[in-house]
Length: 177
Image (cartoon, rainbow, N blue to C red; front, side, top):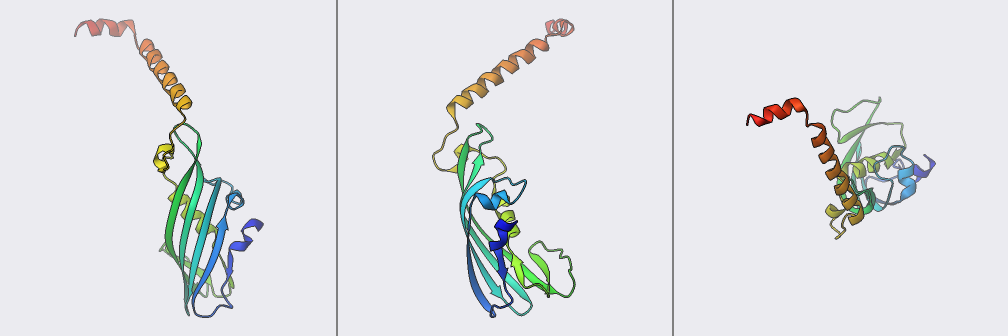
């Protein structure tokens, strides 16, 4: 996780108020996470940290493109994303768990906050459930050769299934119609 060291924000020396942090994300960021849905991308991240007495309020703005594989034709395509999220970090004496997903509890002894996992989760949640070249909105079309091959294979399997279902016992019942 050495590649993610740059995503650690030291907040102990900061004055109360708002502070801006900028990050750039590329393939090395996604390589640090073993089972990532996204393998590559070119993204910019702006983190606005509002430091208060008992908590930190983080506003994330993530935008750019991620590389996905089309579920239909298997071609790689660029998916634009634009994410705005908020995360609250509260300080506690002990490591307490919070029931609210928007609130993270942090020990008062901590001096820095690693935002890499938050950024990673925000990006992965924004990935569409079904990845399709045509839905990316950039005039991209699925690979016509792959689509033709899939249609050819799909029609061949339907005919074979129909042939296998021709059981002589059912043929007598079909005559009764």
